[in-house]
Length: 280
Image (cartoon, rainbow, N blue to C red; front, side, top):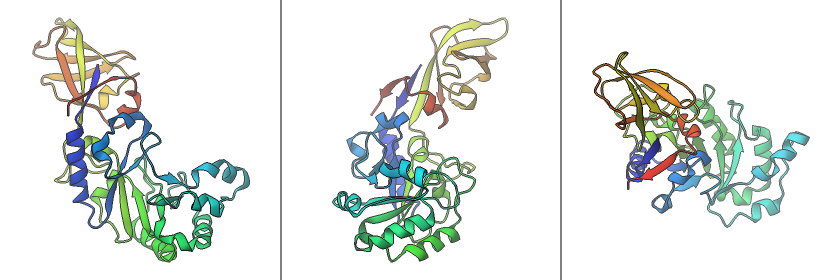
């Protein structure tokens, strides 16, 4: 089994996303489990990810202190040491209860460093697992309270591509749309684009008496039951940790044949050690 990655389609999806966010800019998520998808053609974009990003959330280095003392501690040196970077991000928890500062703690920081307001961006931490993401009125209320101290707001999640984005949002961070061309929590529509990745598996055994084939790749490396089959004439039956069984109703597949599918986003976490092939 291997994962085929087409970076030219990834870049095309980013360009489509730019057309969907109005005056906001697009930033790219390269999480550790797909950080290797990055190359220099994405260098013109703000990129997030510990292996590719030059940006820094200045509060990250004191999260342990905040947990211990219930207060976010930050010094002017911490800001000044990174003011040469294009932006300073302050993560904020806006009703979604993920990582990030409380509104009160974030406000106390930005008031102290108003002279850096042109470089500071509030980063709303809502992301892909998100039934509590803030509605537009809540984002606008946040902006009204902070607008004298920050340059704008960054929101996370490709699902924002299917929403009207408030003018105060300066940046939309995407990952799933770049890779799969899909928008979470949305039915397929004209905004969807092309998948930039595809999985190739091999037929390892054929059972014509029951119209079944067995392929490599089970639940330890990919969620085949959630993948979109591209190869025709097959229907998912079940999987083990190492293999997947499909119904081959026309008995058209033989040992050594290839089965293609589009993985879902969650499968990428499991596929970190699966071989890659980059087509463009």
